[in-house]
Amino acid sequence: MRKSIILGAVVGCIAAPAAFGGNLLSPEMDEQVVVQAASTSSAGGLLIPLLFLIMFAVVISGSSSPAPAPVK
Image (cartoon, rainbow, N blue to C red):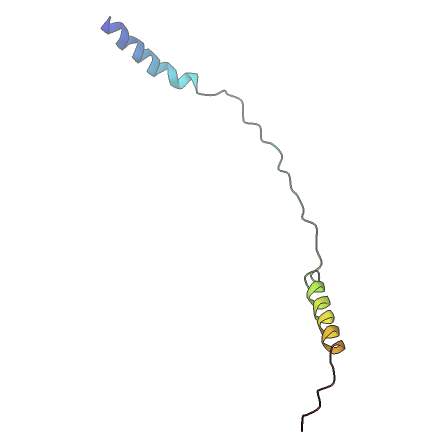
C-alpha cells in the first residue's frame, strides 16, 4: 500500500508539468485599440474667470454711492 502511494505521487509529479504545459501554437495577440483624445481649446479655462471679473467690475461700478456729507 505504501509503495502504491509513493508510485502515484511520483507519477503525478512527472505528469503534472505536461498537463499544464500548453500547446504548440503561437499565441494570438489582440489588436491594440488607440483612442485619440479630442483636442480642446487652450482658452477654455479662461472664459469663466474673465466673465466673473467683468461681472464683479459691473457690480462695483454700479453700486457706488456718493460719499456722505461730513457732520458739523
